[in-house]
Length: 528
Image 1 (tube, rainbow, N blue to C red):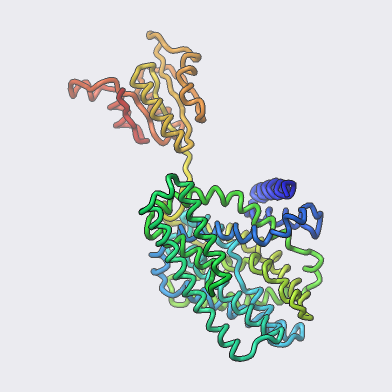
Image 2: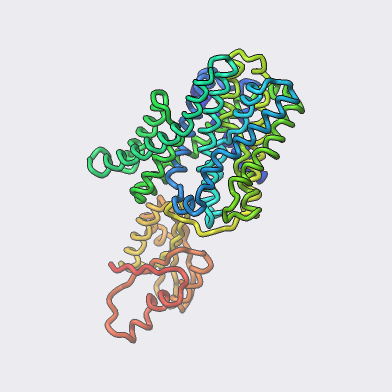
């Protein structure tokens, strides 16, 4: 087990970095790493890992869907009316219809089996779509019209629809469902959506109450433990009640965002850290399910069926879903690219018809595997390539996404008590923000100046922070500080202020006054 974890982490991490160097999404490298180390090629992953790979993938999906809920923008979803709702049904329905017709006439299958294949292939992959859309949100790309939010919401509804219809068609294909059962299962789709929204909302209210009215937690990490515990309950509850667990988990995160934006921001920051590890496990294990020999057995016919479904089914469905919206043609075309990736659902259910004993089960599995190989890397690469070109860059909303910034502070140090205090304050803030400090010492030839060793000794209080020392000779201290701040592109300047200035004339002539007035970055004045 430990060896398997090591292989997944190292292979996935390195392959992701190589893909990044090649200007491809890192998940493409992770998928390929999974294929290579998986049981169908090098077979490096132990059975203990593969036997629980589905559970691991579901847990990581829980993380990313919870994170997506913590960043959904209600105003952007309302702005486009029912577009997200239509995206949840029309593309999947029309793609399935085209695939079913193609399978019926190209492979000679009956309509039920052909439809079964369609409901497997039509499902978009939350594993690919959610992290890619969250990355766009963090960059402000498509933010003005909320396009990433539309794709996120529509994709989640689409999966509920596709998986439910798959269950209906599988039952019919194996002779277990009569017409009354079919209608009952069909009615299960809106029930799963409504109950998923309801239970997610109630879970958010319960978590908010427990965190606000009790003393169960005392840190952000403990808040996260409680929130993830509730999310796991939602995941397990689907075994006993008819609701969409993934929709419930996303709604849970969204409810926390609506009820407590401070808590949502804190949880989002911690979930981001978990996702960096979870992402590797998710895509490597999805890749490990891919059987190249089975995929090749589907041949050109399988490739043609997938392409027809995407080109004529999903494309038409997305155009109809966005009809009457404010989206431009380029933005609508991007939604097509944004929803084309397939991986998670196909890896989970592609082999079920074969396990159920259907004669066409092996071909269904082969086409499912081919859809992952064809669309997951292509969709991810298309999103990365086309988003900056087809979508407008808007303002990044820091209340909905985690905004990463590496802060750089400039501290002017002259060995006075005030400058020591400025260094202490800068170090304390930089430590919390994982920032960087540049310590600037201005030396004048006629004065007694600090040696480099003396400056290094003063900097010991910031030894756990990335730092550098700059020593400059200048008669114009204020101008030297301002020019250094500009050269170093610092975010803040920290100055020690010796004492209160006794007159306006002295104030105007002071170094602090000149720097505060002329420097581009904000200036923090610290008194001892």
